[in-house]
Every structure is written in structure tokens, then in C-alpha cells.
Image (cartoon, rainbow, N blue to C red; front, top):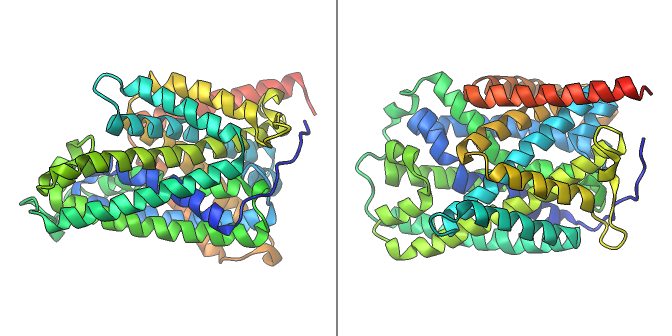
Length: 417
């Protein structure tokens, strides 16, 4: 195994919660409700509840495992330790490919809300470069900037909801009979897409090597961040459905901008656009940090090139991994669609948490914090939601997994342990 310098423990409970909330709120509020509505209409509210249940099970599994293995890498390390090298590799590879797609999705979300027409992709690439530079100069700067971004976003979201609900509503609204009109397959597909919004707590676990008192801090931070994000999602989801109705929401490219416009508050659209941009930047900042650290862990164990094991001697960050990520994401930005990126990201991350749940299930009784029933429900939920995602997302996800498996098999054949 390739060794490298350890990362410094500098993050407290508040820092960890902020990084998790920043990741989830940025991803979910501004990017995911439109495709979820396109899949299930008003049934996305049921989908949101299903996604939240699966996310809670996954979060408790991650918290239980992170308390036992407080190091960089998240489920990549948990899978290796609890199940073996191949399951660990599949978890790490699924996370890296899924969250690399998430980076592209967040950069595109930022640019969609803030860039002039025709400049979306150049602005998205510029965002990737700028935030990679922020991460490069240290994790404490990452946590500090994320705290500022989260505060701005929550204030703007609160104002948007108040403006929307005090203005004239769309005539459609939400009829309870509409919740299941699309059918349960469509509702499950919306849940799979909405799961994209809940995956931010993974960043807390993957940064376990940098958290102070990780055995206590990580479990508390994961559950707290998830609860805060869920409350925000429920309020915003109900608001956009009440104001726009499911049909208009399904075709919207900027739902919260459309919400304040429909409510007769068009003067607020520039503020909402700024909020969307800030939220996407907060999510992107934490994503870059999380993917970089999982790549570092995989490279340490020989599952990615040893070049990625480098830790900056002054700033104590995996700078080679983060620079490589920036290059790959920039390429994706110019080649993919935002909604496809969300589906592909969900597929990879659901497989990642499937392995997390199985890993947590195998832990001994003296390492357990939650009932095994949570892990069983989480694993079943991950499999179900992954299977109901759009066919293109599943096909591309399987193809990329096969590439990763082939690469590792070839490496093992050439360099057997």
C-alpha cells in the first residue's frame, strides 16, 4: 500500500454540520425538483419522503461506520475493512464517478442561474477552477467559506418562501388525489432522483481524518445535517408545487425564479438567482473536498494511480487529487446535460450506500449504534431506487462500473499482491 502524510484534524462539530448542510441544500433545492416533478408530478412529495427514509438509514450506517473508522475515504474504507477489497473498491469507484458527475451538475446549476445566455458552460468551468483553488489552500478555508455560503442561502430561501406564499398562487395547486396519479414506479423514480439531494452527509464521513474527536463528532454531525436539510426540502417542495403546479414545475429550468415571478414578486428574481448560485457553489466546494479525499484513500491502497496520494506539505490537502478532479469535471461540463448528470450521480451514490449498509450490518455488537433493521431497510431502498432510475442513467452507470472493475482486475493481474 502506498503511504502518504496524514491530514490534519481541524474540523469541529459546527464545521462538519455546515459542510454537510452546504452540500445537501445546494444540490437539492435548486437542481432536483424539476426532474422529480417530470417523473411523478405532485407525487414527488411521496418520493421525497421515501428518499428521506432511505437517506436516514444510510446516514445512520455511515455514522456508525465513521465512528469505527475515522479516516479519509468513507465507505471505500468501510467496505474494505468489513467486506473485503473488492466491495471497498466498488464503493469507492461508485462514489468517485457519482460525485464527479455531481460536481459537474452543481457547476452547471450555478451557471444556469447566474451566467448570461450562451455562457453557461464557460462560467461553469470557471467555477470549478476557482473553487478548486479555494480547496487547495486548506480545509479550514473550505469550512469557513461554506459557513458563509450556507447562511446566505438559508436567508434567501426563507425570503423566497415568504414572498411566494404571500402572493397569488397558481390555479392548479396540490390536490391530494394527484399524489399517486403518476403511479408507484414513477414515484420511486422521483425518489431516486431526489436522493441526489440527500447525499451531502457523505462529505462528513469522507473527511473523517480531518475531524476533531471523530468518534463523537461524525455521528452527531451526519444526523444533524440531514435533519436540517430535510426540513428545508419539505418547505421548498410544498412551496414550488403550490405556486407553480406540477406541470409547470416539470418544465422549469429555474424553479425558484419562476416561483417569485408567478407570485408577482419579479423584483426579487436577481436575489433568488444569487441565492441559487451561492448554494451551488457551497455544494460544489464540499463535493471537491469529498471526492479528493476518497481518491486519496483509493490511491493509498493502490486502486487509483499513486500520483493521487500526494498531500500538500503546507496546506495539508490532497492537491493532486483535487487538480485531477477539476480537469475531469471540466471535460464533463462541456459534454453532458444537467438532468442526465443528476440521474447518473444518483446511480453511483446509491450503490455506494448499498455497500455502506451491508458493511454496517456486519459490524460487531460492541461497535453498533443503530438496529440492524435500519441497515436492511437502507440496502433494500438503495437497490430499489437505483433500479427505477431513468434507463440511460442505469446503462451509463453500469458501463462505467465495468470500466473500473476491468482496470482493477488488470492491475491485480499485472501486480499481484
